[in-house]
Image (cartoon, rainbow, N blue to C red; front, side, top):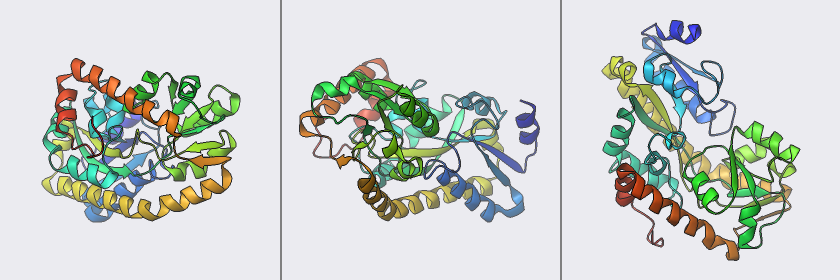
Length: 323
């Protein structure tokens, strides 16, 4: 990785590997917004550059280079780290959890210490820096009508977080990849359903052309956290001013995302409804099955990981949900 080693050697430069294509609405574009804010505030003190997947490391393989310092930082999500510690799935936005704004307040307040400690345990420092507030549960090629239909799903999702565990527990086959790759797999017949993330991504990718039946919203991801992740050594080497500026810029990016999505996402949903064969809530005969699958998943992860047990016990679950 000569490129990353050379780029990272300059103390006044910060290279960031993005887990998501930077042109992807919300998932990638919020990373672009955050880096622009940082650069504007710091001027020549720190030159921050965000790179698309594959530019600094093979797609999906950027985390270890960040830990060892070959890459300065990553634009990512806690949900991509649940195989290292399942508690990241709670920090990243658990199934049947709080709305996005409430979840971010919890993450910045009561959960802040545990979130920081979980990252430091694997050699990283992380700053919550973005959030997705709305997405579809699934776009399917055949309508969902009965509980058994979940077991027929071959569904592609963007992030292999807790939602993937829940879908597998419910009997679905799950494949994780980029939105573009999942779109191609659905066209080829390898998948019969997709969940690509924000509604604006569905509009951009024209998801209705590969799977025309949409079910929204997604109870498995009412909030989806994006964060800026640094190697601990690189983070600590930054000046106090740089660290404070990065935190402020991330806070501003989160607030801007929540404000934008409160108006943009309903508009996107309206446009999707015009294109889809159908757009509806998860049918009542099916609705209880994802919740049952989540409870089963949570029980197993609680028994296996004390960190997950602590995170799920501390989470302020919605009052209408008996976890």
